Image 1 (cartoon, rainbow, N blue to C red):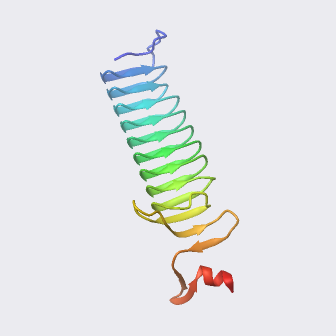
Image 2: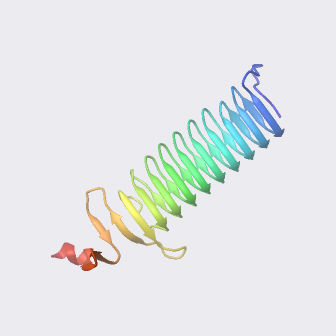
Image 3: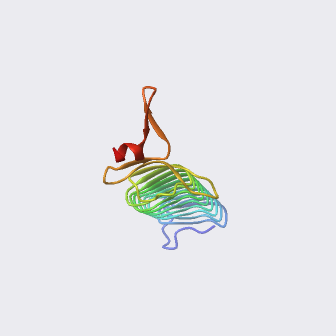
Length: 173
């Protein structure tokens, strides 16, 4: 274990096997690195005011990466397994990607352009809101709200038990 190379061990803690803690860092477990942050578990890296916890997670400034194989960029959150969140974004679940200012939740969803994606394997990634209903072979969307307010649905629409038809036929009327 190594601690602050500036000779300032105040607020620095490294415990376990091959951990590194610097400048008020806390590293605990095995092969963790913490710089003014907390890294806990196995092979996690946390920098400035962030938390990386679990296994093989990386968190940059003021972010949280928790679970296994997650990457959280500045001011973001990635939780679950193998999620990636960029600037001011959030990705939770399994294999989700949230680009700047976006949120992705579920399994293999992708959100960009300040949008939100939930569900499974969505196809459209630049909508304001999308519910994916695809699979590992074919990505598809059940419901989409675009940034201009347009709405699209893959199936029929009903309200209070009355079928209104599909959105594509409603838009043509």
